[in-house]
Each structure stands twice: as C-alpha cells, then as structure tokens.
Length: 99
Image 1 (cartoon, rainbow, N blue to C red):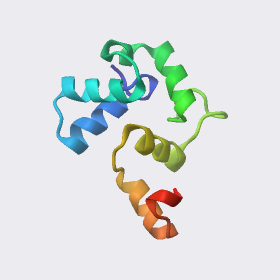
Image 2 (image 1 turned 60 degrees about the vertical axis):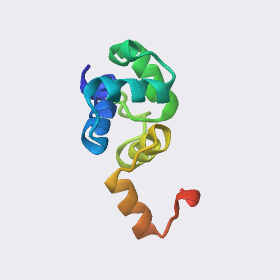
Image 3 (image 1 turned 60 degrees about the horizontal axis):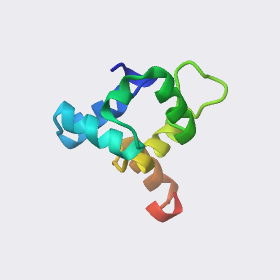
C-alpha cells in the first residue's frame, strides 16, 4: 500500500489517529469505502474511489480537490477528526452540520 495513489494515507490516519493496528485500520477504511481490504492497494480502483469521493489525487492536479477540501471529504467519508479541518471550522465559525 502506498500513500495517496492508493489508500495508504487513509490507513495511516487510522493507525496514528485512532491507535489501530494495521489490519484493523485497513478493515475499517475498506468498510467505509465499500471495498475489500485487498482492494486498498489497487491503484486503478483507488483512483476511481478517490475521484468519486473527492479525496484528492497526486497525479490529477487540475481536476481533483486539493488541500483542505480533500481533507474535509476524507473526514466526512471515513468518519474521523482531522485537526486542520476542525481548526478551519472553528475559525470560520462553522459547526459540523454547516460543513
């Protein structure tokens, strides 16, 4: 599994942010995305999924969400807190329902 081309960044967020072991993190992310854990390392499938949910892609610079927009999409779909998203919402005066 490798970073933003597949689902490595999403799995790593679960490992670090939620203190999950790698197998549990893979299963959690796979369940949220509606795929099998083995599919998380399929770069073609994950390119479609990342585009569908707006998670950002490193090689599609002009069309995919970037920065905070991609992080908002990840936080919503995966169901996790991302510090930069929480800080942005607080400074912008947004609540979770308004995001």
